[in-house]
Image 1: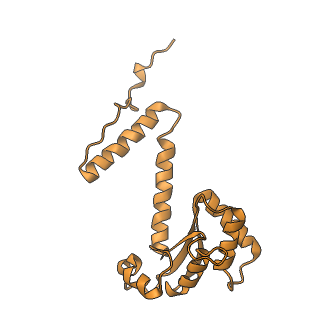
Image 2: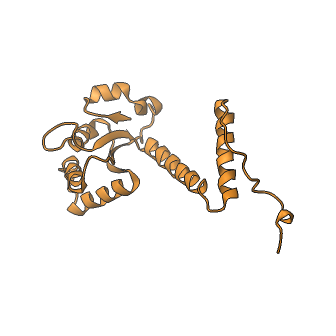
Image 3: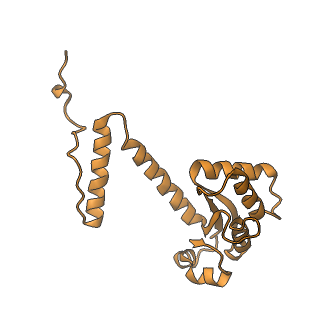
Length: 176
């Protein structure tokens, strides 16, 4: 991922995207705008307007992008065939009132990386939701399974309370 104001050569040199997919002729790149706690609604729309100037984007696009950033924490802003085509829009996104790096945070990644990120984001969101399930047995089972997977993957040990067995037989339930 690329973040901040750099020239295209620096980005190409350091880009994991280029290293990960060097021979992919269909590879495209996307500018992502990220949410933060420092910019208000109008500031976010102004930064998006700057980034998309010259793209013939209707004004409702800025509002929709700002809503998506607010709701999801990020939004794809612009897709191009090369990283170089996204440098100026990224710098514009990060500029506020003429001051560089005071606007929204912008990164450039491949569309494949964005797809991977989005899938991981959805999985983590689902796991988080399930770990807070109203049925404590389900929540505890999910938590213990997550811990077990991490322990196996990273050969580490995590402590957690003993979960209630989700798969206890129904015969153990007392009927009144």
